[in-house]
Each structure stands twice: as C-alpha cells, then as structure tokens.
Image 1: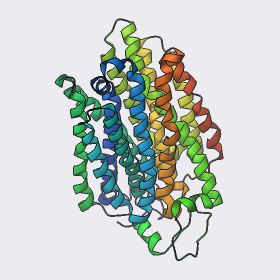
Image 2 (image 1 turned 90 degrees about the vertical axis):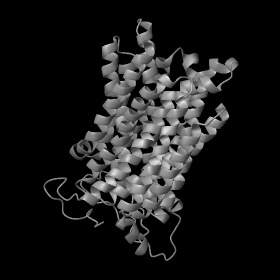
Image 3 (image 1 turned 120 degrees about the horizontal axis):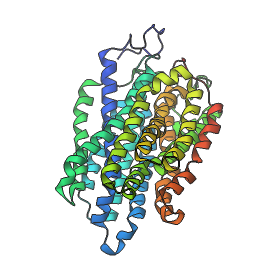
Image 4 (image 1 turned 135 degrees about the horizontal axis):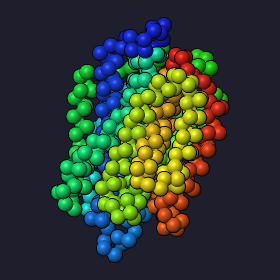
Length: 440
C-alpha cells in the first residue's frame, strides 16, 4: 500500500482514502468485533457458567468466582498483549494479527468444553493472551497506512468494532439462551468463527510499508524528539522505550491514564446491567430482561462515543478530549448509581455512561500511535493498552468481594469512581499531537 500518512492534507478528511485503506480498516474492525463479542460473551454467560461448574455448596460465592474468571482473562490479556505488541515490531503487523486471531479463536472455542471452574479460568487466561495482542497490531497497521487527516476517524471507527461485538454477543445469547443450562457453552463455540478472518487477512491485506521501511533503514527512534540512532543492531524495543527520557515520560503518563480508563470500566461499568436488573426487580419488574436492555443501551452509547471520537479529538485537540472523557466518567458514575430514581432515567444515564466510560477507550486508538515512532509503536501501544491490566484486573476481583462488604453495587461503584481523577490530573501534561504526522 502506498504510504499516504505524510502528504499534504486535502480539504476533505476522506478524499485520499482508497479501497486498500478500507480493507485494512475492515480487517482490524472485524478482529475487534470478535474481541468485543468474546469479552461480552464472558460477562453475559459467566453467571450461568459458574452455576453449572460450581459445586452446590459453593454457589453462594458466584460473585467472587465470576470476578476471578474476569480478572484472570484481564491478566492474560495484559501479558499476551504486551508480548504480542513487541513481536509486531519485529515480525510485522500483519503476521502478528494473524497469530492473534487464530489464538483467541482456538481458546475461546475450547472454553466451551470446560468441566470445572479451574479449567474455565485456565482457558480464559490463554484466550486473554491472544485478545490483548490483536488490538495493538491492528491499530498500528491502520495508523501507519491511513492518511493523517483520516487517521483519527478511522481509529474511532475501528474502536467501534468492540461495541458492535457486544451487540453481536447479546443477539447470539438471545438465540442460544433457550437451549438450557449448557447454552453458555454454545456461546463460546461461536467464538471460533473469527478464525475464518485469517483467510481474508492473508490474501487481501498488505503489511505496513512504514514499518518495513523503518526496519530496512534501521530507524530506531522512540519519539519525534529522539533523533536518529546510528546503531547497526536493533535495541530491544521495550528497554529502549524506557531508556529514552521522553519515551519513558510519555509511557508512564499514558499508563496512568490507561489505569484510570480500564479500572473504571472493569470495576464500575461492567456491573451496570446487574444493577439495573436489581433495580427493576425491586420495583416488581422482570430483572433479567431489564438487565439485558441496560446492557444494550449502555453499549449503544459506547458505539456512538466510538464513532464520533475521531471528530471530537480533531475538534477539541487531544488534551481537551482526554479531559472531556475523564470528567464524563467521573460524573456519570453517580448519575447511574446514585442520582437515577426511575427506570427511564437509569437507562438514559446508562446510555450516557456508555458514551463516556466505554467510548473512552477510543483515546488509545487515536492518541497512542501519535506519541511513539514506528520502531516502537507496537511495543508502546501494547504496553500502555495492556500493562494497565496488571493493576486493572484487581477491579472486578475486588468489586466482586466488596459488593457484600460495602452493602451493594452502588457503594462499590462510587468508591471506585475516584480512579477517574488520576486521568483527569495527568491529561494536561500530555503532548498535544493534533494535526501532526506520525513520528517516523
């Protein structure tokens, strides 16, 4: 594919996009659709799965067991994603994307055959290893091939795949749930389907020319301020990222924002459907039905947040957009858990919460490629996106334990919401990259 990332920007953001650009977006988008499906499949069926796998004497601990399964998935996501991002800087974006899709398809399917909680948790860890690496490689491939003026919008479109994957999971569960107590197994079997995406990737997608050129010309920079290093042997990218002063500063600050975003979602927002279901049941309505509705409403808000993210980031500038996201997450937590006193208000607040808390993940796709040079882009993006999960995995684990201790979901969510203050404090210290070409 011709590199159009550094040419002069035309008046229309989409004027220079070609079919090859859209094929890259399609491949990365559908990879992320099934990541979203897989994540929401776990959240959706974890209750029935634990009810089926836990001995009768331990079913009073379903919340804790569910939190453990989600936490272990995040832990695998963190470990595999970091390794996968580093590998993408050495073996190429396309090849690592292929490995990621095959890996998470395989282990998602094997999860269906779990016969114990321990086996399910082990398969969740292995699935997470490949889930984490798919995003950073697909996003790096898009960032390095799309024109500068279109890149933020394309990144937002890519990120929306996660929300559409959640809708897919909801639709599939609606069809499978009548199958009975083992319907959760069929839900995971559907996760094998992304493996067929590999056929499209192998034939229709080229690797990043920007990455190939950087390797060919031995350009081992970390940021645009690093200068060109005259080294014949390539430094290990993760060590290089932290050895460079500006690279280290950007990485640490971005990781703090990532912890704020990730822990806020896993520790607060993932409990919204259950909270709405409990609210509905308390008022004499069918709790599981309204929990499902709340999940769809929340995700609809997130999809809107994803789709408009690139336009908002270009309009506001990167730093103001980041502040906008963290303020929204901080405010929308009490809006759901404290200030909503009717079902209609609660559902609207859930939609807004989705726009800000899950839609907030777009900043990774838009902003991280602009902070780091091609040599370390996969490593840096994966490290920031995934390393925060080594801390964030404690969110669902702690929340599952604290629900009983603090007297319910609302108190736990409000306690966790202070995590957004970290991102709010850090964002003004990040560099402004609006309108600038990617560091080479």
